[in-house]
Length: 127
Image 1: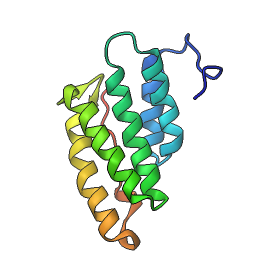
Image 2 (image 1 turned 180 degrees about the vertical axis):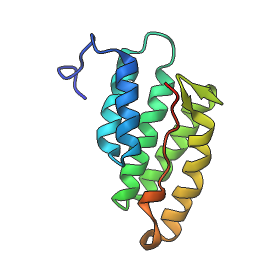
Image 3 (image 1 turned 45 degrees about the vertical axis):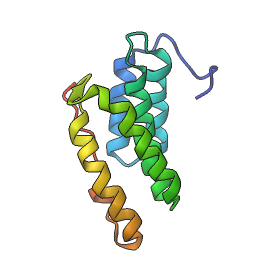
Image 4 (image 1 turned 180 degrees about the horizontal axis):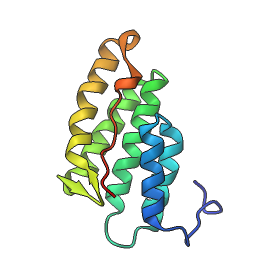
């Protein structure tokens, strides 16, 4: 997202909801744009929460592309950023996301041809 694309009037809650919807539909690259909006607009001290969501989305995007090293690095970053927001934040079940990401990532790297993207991690959201 460029500064030109950033709309400071867009509510962070809308970006979060739309990013989660895209993430859960498997549109990881697109969802990261909405999460990035939350990161750039965050004035409430939770920029790291949105950075963690960005890294989760791009982790799965890299995994789809077969870039396992990049996916593993992003997964580590995601865990580091989101740890402070356990068990949930802004209606997102952070614990569940972190619990689903690790085994999916490991399975995808170990058996890339057998991975079922319909079983990819989903964000549980009560917002």
